[in-house]
Image 1 (cartoon, rainbow, N blue to C red):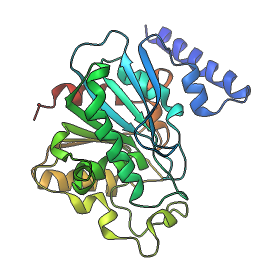
Image 2 (cartoon, rainbow, N blue to C red):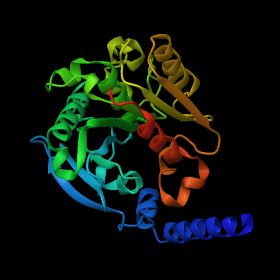
Image 3 (tube, rainbow, N blue to C red):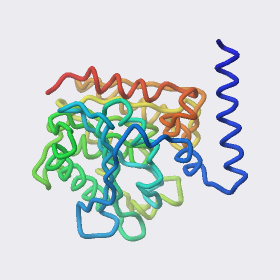
Length: 291
């Protein structure tokens, strides 16, 4: 059985290499190996007037009424990214019965902090208002993000001003999931990120760790233990510890095989062997009590 499993995994890696030789990008490779039989997608829904204020909704092919809902924000140092690159995320969650929203948001240099958080809040408000039309339950709403998208999810869950501006509250969230998120990163070292946060005058209130409070939504924080872009001890570990000290349910998990970038890729079917990230996310959503 083990040998057959290894052979199957080797065949997958071989397919990825063949596609890479054909000139496909890494996300194109993952999406090319992602089935489309597990979900129905409604793409390009506007939640605002800007061309970047759009989202895609992934609905399980045979949805259960009142399914849980995840709003996912991708990473890219607030400089790059597109919802169309994350079909593998939508498929992964939808295949587990979760209605999934993948949202674009405005990026630098079009905007700087905190305007992309306003976009995130508007995408969440759209989801709460409309997700019943897609078999989702707005009372079972979660946020999730990778890297800078994990930061976005953290800020919306912890700093109540962003959801308050759209008539919501972090108490409307059942929980949030951060994958390799930067939650405590001043002074900023990444040159791509510095102008986003007005370096060297980056405001302390821009840091999620400074908004920890009793009563915040439960959190699942996952990181690559050897992450060389976002320090997992300071960011994931530090935030989890501070949340628990405030009486907030927070679990932090670390995996040695993925990198900062491939941590989110473990949600894809070809790379799930690297770490059980999808299983952890699904379990967190299934076992978080309804508030």
